Image (cartoon, rainbow, N blue to C red):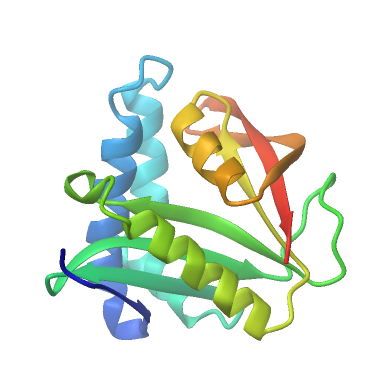
Length: 174
């Protein structure tokens, strides 16, 4: 099996991240019956533009990691420094805002390699807790996070277009 390379994204990766985030989000959620196509499209038009990703890449509080397999982008993670929500208990938190891999790489270790790299980066910068929100109708992701030591600590609303969805808040002590 090929080696998965993880690297920190740079501003030059705005186009690559736009394509990667758009494709992986679509693949993960477009075919779920709870997601209305208009709501999904509205959210994606706002969240996954080159302009929006360029702003996020320029933000010192936002870190993107890109996983590459056979010299192709296979997945990515987005971390937000010092982000916290009610229910999360931490002195120096870091949010795992996104972690996605291309469908063709599911089960090949991309997600786990990204997760491990996120933990490593968070520990290097002395964060005490990593937390995330995961959709209540995404049991596969919930199991993945539980396997990685996260536990549920609350809920919050994720606005997908006009649809207020419920995310489970999960955290892991580092």
